[in-house]
Length: 160
Image 1 (cartoon, rainbow, N blue to C red):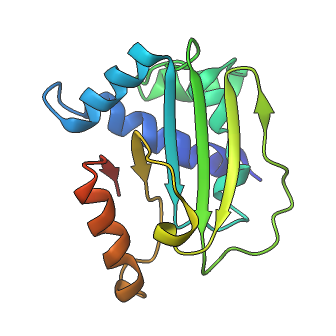
Image 2 (image 1 turned 90 degrees about the vertical axis):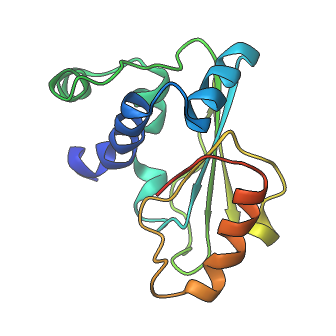
C-alpha cells in the first residue's frame, strides 16, 4: 500500500480527535479511555484490502517513522497520542470482507481483531469510539440503519 493509503484512516481519526470540542461525547470517551488505560476503536464497514493495511499502530501508539512524523507535523496532529495505553482495534465488515491477507497485529499495548458480518451480529463488545471510513451507507441503508441505531442507543461516539 502507498503511504497515502496507509495514512488515510489514522490521520482522519486523529484530525477528528484534534478538532472535537471539549464538551463532546467523543472527547469524554477518549479521556475516560486514557484514565482506564485502554481505548477500544471499532473500524466498521471496512474493505479488507484497505483499512487493515493502514498504519494504525504507528499513528496511534508510535513510534512514528520519518514520513509519518512529517505528516502529523504538517497537519498539526498529535504524535502517537495513545502511546501510554492499550489500543484495541476491531475491523468489521461484510460486503467487501474478502480473504484477509494481513494477520492481525498483536503486541504490548496494541491489538487487532477481525469480525466478519453485520456489526450487530458479529461484534459483542462495546467500543469507546466507532469509526466509519467509507462504509457505503447510501448503497445499503437497510443494513446500516440497525447498526447506527444500536451504536446511538449505546451512546457510542461515531466518526463518519
